[in-house]
Length: 77
Image (cartoon, rainbow, N blue to C red; front, side, top):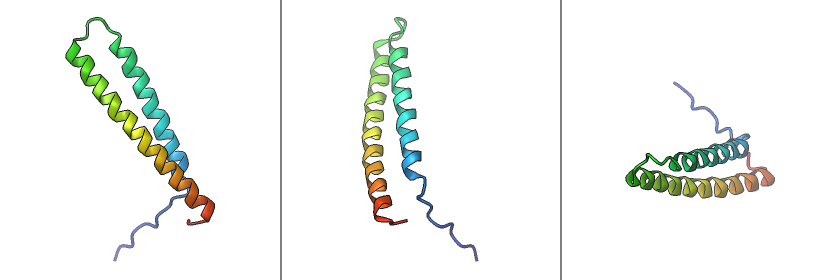
């Protein structure tokens, strides 16, 4: 029988912080792309909508970082 891998949460905070940084960089790159004059208003609207979803993701990541930091402080893992 296969045993499931244990839940290793030791690097979750760092991993989540890296995800925030990557998502922030994606937002910045998309903003630069939107400055292209050849881009249609529909394309710009799609990028803006995606950036809004990215912002929501960042908020979720930050909440999860807080939870993970608290778990670390309590010694939950």
